[in-house]
Length: 253
Image (tube, rainbow, N blue to C red; front, side, top):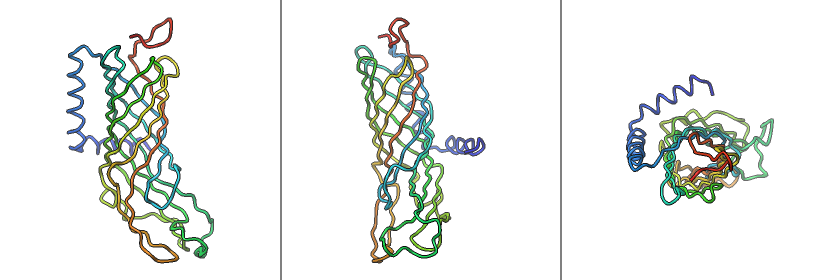
């Protein structure tokens, strides 16, 4: 992705009223919490998504994409073991199936598979909000919800016939994928060294992102499937202003 394309996506996000309606109230709430002497922590995360789309007739977390963005963390409770985290992420999701035949001269009549090859690229701006609990300043686990706004969609298909891989021109931001994606999130962070954490995250769409009819190439029966994002995320997270003890290298209480 070039700098110009990233900048154009950023402009689209800033012009989207729904995202602003979500972000601004949450930011106001986070700032209000600071009145009660809860110091806000700033962080940045970078890593990759391993994703698939359930219901697209292909399987496996084979689509690799970026997951990057800043976050704010507000500790609360006894010994500040609890925290509320909000992030603003650039996230690439989708689906992928490698082409099995380099030369599609004839259809493969020995299989009922719908695709020979398939690629789907969905680009989201996501706003996860989670509650975490930290144990012994080493590991933290959390759950929450993530709202995603679709800002890019591209799809390529290679059917089980002689046409080969081609781009689906009807796949745009207007259709057939929904512009909004709401996911449930489970999150684990493990401290690697001082302010640097390893982050494992699993998320799954609560609402469908698309409805599609599939026609079996052999039996010609039609199956209607609801599609959902299914994502594993692996990242590194650095917390800028976390107070670390010089003696132990752990967070100060």
